Length: 115
Length: 113
Image 1 (tube, one colour):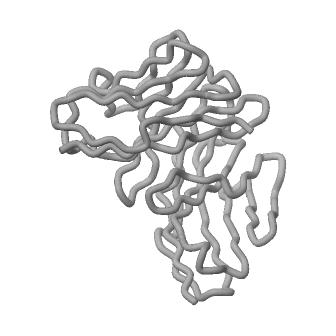
Image 2 (tube, helix red, strand yellow):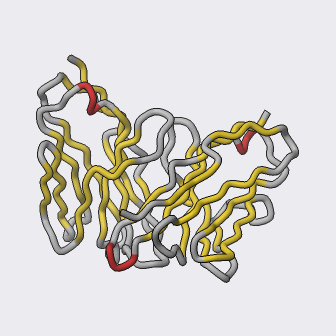
């Protein structure tokens, strides 16, 4: 079946630094990738939608200059958390729709801790 | 946009009992309704899904029902086991390429033996 590989699974960074999270579609072309954020004991909240070769669409309240999304190829979408702060500590997870097959494939998630 | 409400937020049952979690959605264009199980520290795992052309779907101890007129769908788990304890999320989407899944707030299910 379709697989989305997400890395890293865990990352600890210092406040003020940037962190890049990658999601790769291994056996299909992901023209679209959805990025979610999940705070402890909360639901998955859609942050943004990336489309290959075009600018990402951000949900209301999500800072586009802070959460940089790049979708330069059909198999790779990246989320960069810039100038990270402790309040950015969260679980970030990507998801790609399966088109005609229906459904969505999720990455395994990235636990970001900003200290 | 789509809004998904999920109830209850917590549910405690005895092993062997049934558990029911209910969700409502707002966007009549939504036609895909999956349910996910999430264990601590892990990503969500799809356990069952249903599309709008079907009213009910069953997979062993798990079943999902959909009422498109009322815009609600439910997850039914029978003969619960301790390993069913987890957080369950419902979601909805129009299942088109540019449409994301919108999640409910989740239900923490605890099954005691």
